[in-house]
Image 1: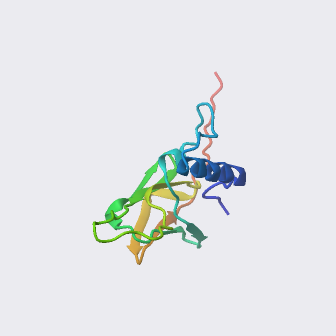
Image 2: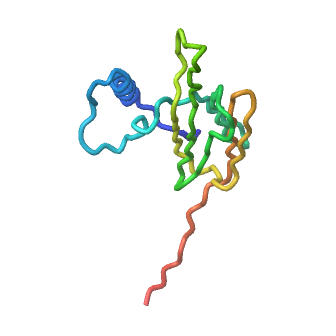
Image 3: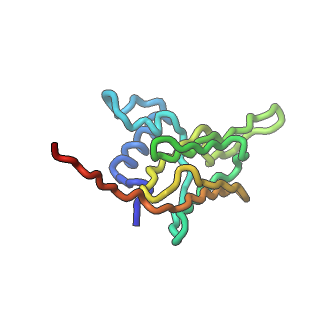
Length: 151
């Protein structure tokens, strides 16, 4: 079975701490020019389930309260990127929020595709706040042998 994404719990903890600090206006805990800029550009990340069948991988992403026009799915160099934005409704003069627990703003998730997935055969369906991406499997490219002539 191929992995679609690598999970590192330390990175998730650091990202959570960074978002906490940013929320309360505290200085960043990160230093230097790091390649992990996902949560610098994202305010939150949707929960996903990844399933595998004999024919395909399926990614189910929870995107409640988001319009399909606000979601973008791209594939480049073996990486599938899911990004978009949950827009916050502004308060009007005659109403006010008593509690806001949902997270608003931009989001991004990236998944490294296994070798047996066709980048050109990915389907997306959006219904009831769930985005389902179906990634069709293909036979991985077999190494070919090249005959070497001796002169």
